Length: 369
Image (cartoon, rainbow, N blue to C red; front, side, top):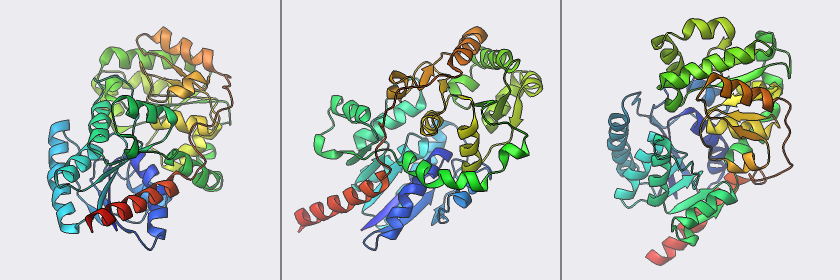
């Protein structure tokens, strides 16, 4: 059985690290790893392959950045060609990026079964490109690996046949368990930037709905400026966010009040997350990582896919409409503790995914015979 995996962006590298380790250890599975090049910067790509010990991609398309249609179209053409050349039995895609959608579309048009890791997530905000990507990918997929019961229920409500849905748990939880201890040993980032555990707030900002909206970006920076008067704020800076800050004239203010770091690798990020007093983010993955490390979180968006964390009190959603809303939401959440919950499985999601793929392959092979 040959599985062609499509990845392209930072969150996918974390997930693929957990799954590839299991796939490559199985003698019955031949694995081909394709990197679209969606994230191509050294700090956003290669460092994750190195730290997470992911084998080098069998092929890097080096697509790079571009408008959504342009980027997805170039990926679609190249992935289709690779799938035909490799004669793959499955296309395995992750999450909600343009790489995800391109991989799913290329495969389904070639009648190659699509397996979607992290299926069923919904923000119910169709203005988000990620929401469109994940909905279309789910409805094109043959095997849908739902990380939570909520995700499974979303798929059921949309009419996805029950036999296609697999409740596996979350592969990011697998990764957090496997690499969390390593980050304690390998990361020196707190010492490097003179950070005291539980005495700083970690912030990440990268979503287009925040970076491309001048009013929201101003509200975020001014709100963080208010909070920084009492608690230091650490901001590993996404290249898109830096460009937006410079374009809108907010860079000087941000640089003067926030401790701005270059993009960091997975192990350094894990160390920052574990030791923060609070995390304020617009990232889906960082919300979960905050919970894995029992760090309270504020989501700087109008909604979240991870509603179970809001219901349990680990996460608060704060729409970044004014500086006051941002600062109040963060300050009121400092020191919060949520209920004890375990929504993301037992740390064996990758094993369940590999087993489901093999079982599906055996069953469909028997039908073909």
